[in-house]
Length: 158
Image (tube, rainbow, N blue to C red; front, side):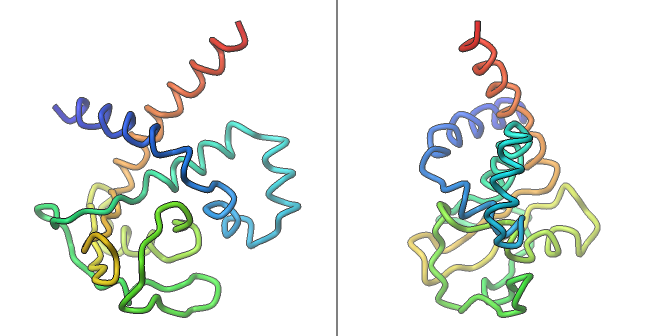
């Protein structure tokens, strides 16, 4: 059953993936150094795509809070580079929200449980909850996506 849910999630993300902006998502990973990001993209395009997809897979919005998650306020989230927190009325935009810019990983690891999903209240957004998948789920979904991505690339080269 869990595998079916992951496959459905991969398909849904593949549909939405094109809308998300990899540059916006990945630039904080490179500390806003566009030249470094472009070099990385040229030298290791598959790694770049994997890291981008991993960050895309971190989040989804929900109208209901998933069962058994830890709930935080979006205003608890900090920019890792400036230390500023997000405003309580922050409007989520999954096209540009960067897992690498904010301290979401800290929230995931604070309880030392890589299988724990967390959730943020986002009253300023269209959906009241921003869900951050567990690290394990992020990896599983990304690995499934990446295997499909590489198979598609291989088939297009044949």
